[in-house]
Structures are given as structure tokens and as C-alpha cells.
Image 1: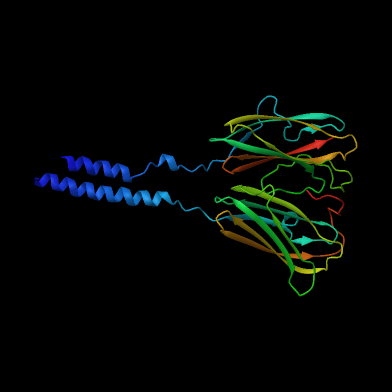
Image 2: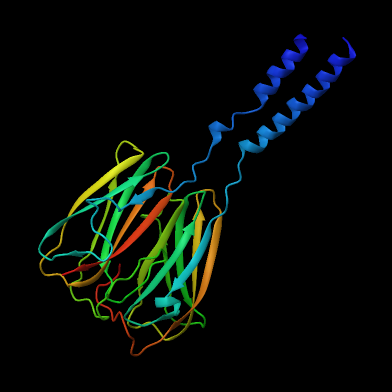
Length: 153
Length: 152
């Protein structure tokens, strides 16, 4: 009988816990569909004013960082991740396009985070069609990109 | 020891062996090699660039082993012409997936002709994957993107 118990213990010891080796393969999530989320698809921001970017991010394990990238879309270009077009102005040349590229660390590796960033749009930039891209990366390195088309008036 | 106990021992030895083998498999999970999908060269993937303008590039990269670097190289099909090589790590290193989106300035004196473009992704385990494309550098009138500092 002791032998049986000994083998049972050995079997348990040699097998390993699968839970400890679970690999995180889930992408973080960007939520822009709540009251107060800004900007919205096809939304407008004004030159010479400061707007506040607001979105909620979440991840199954831990969030790491996010970045914002606002650039002109005067050439009607595309991104591999669908950025839906709005009612766009004609293709034109950029003279003084607004450009904003910045990365932010999300401290404390939380599962959810509400981002709030004030972005000042100078009065002398080109008005027109712009892309507003947000990238959120979890601690594991999975990245989610969400792109909006907006207008600067 | 009776017959029944012997049988139980045989079963347990077998069980122990299987759990041990099973464990070994789990310990070294195969990490998938990197992938490049939907490489877009030029607007609407027209594979055309103009001297003095910029070349739009876009690709979805998946690297479960974590991106170590992304290398872009452009060279002429013939012997002479414009050569470009750049390694991108900033903003990409450590990511397991990303949208590679870059605009490459094509110098105004780049020779017209047929070119070849290679995009190589190396992950942190040393695995690499390459995507390639043909590229024509053509002078002349174009619809968009005349130049200026427009390199997002």
C-alpha cells in the first residue's frame, strides 16, 4: 500500500502545474464609447484651443504604456488597421501640418486605466483632415491600435 | 504482494511516466516565428515612389517572441541607384505585435528605375522573417505628397 502512495506522490511531483505556465496572448482593449470619451470618430477640434483626449484602456493582466499620434491626412493615406474615413476635404499639400507624437507610461501595471491628456492645437496649423492614432501596449508586449479620423478647424 | 497490487503499480508507473513526458513538453512551449502581413508599399500598395517625395510603408507585424529589430532596405535592381538601409528599434522593441508605419524620404536625386525592397523582422530569440516587394521610382507628376516636411 505504501508503494502505491509513493508512486502517487511521484506522479504528482513529476507532473507540473499548467496554471503557472499560462501564456498571456490577449491584446489590451481601447474603449472610446463612453460618455466623455474624446475625440470621437469624425469629430472636430479647433485651432488655438486645447482639447482633452479621454479613453479607457483595459487588459487581462497588466497595462504597460500608451502613445498618441496625430498627423495630417491631407493625402488620404491608409493604415493597415482600419481607420474609417469621414467626409474628407480634397487632397492637398501640407504647409504647416499639426503633428503630435507622444508616449506615456502607465504606472503601477493596472488592469484598467483612464487616460486623460490635454493637447494644445496651435492657431497657425493647417486645418483639414487628420488621423488620431492611439496605441496601447500591455506589459507582455501586445499592442492594440485604434485610429480615428478627425478634423481640425 | 498480491496480483491486484502489482497491477496497480504497473498502472502507476505508466501514469508517472506519462505525466513526466507531458510535463517536459509543456516546459518548452514553441514560440511562433515572426510574421509580416499586408505589406503596403506606396499609397494603395501601388509600389511607386517619386524622387523628392516620401514613400509610404505599412505592415502588420506579429512576433510572439518579442520584436528585437525591424530592418528596411531598398536597393536598385541594376548596379547603380539609390540605396537605403535603416534599422528600427525605437517604439517597436519588445512588442509582440505592431503596425509598422513609416514614411521614407526619397532623395530628389534618386535615379529612376526598378528597385527592390526588403523588410526584415528579427525577434528576441533570433528568429527572422522577411517580406519583399518590387518598387518603381518614377519622376513626374503625381497626385499627392509632393514633399515638404511630411514624414509621419
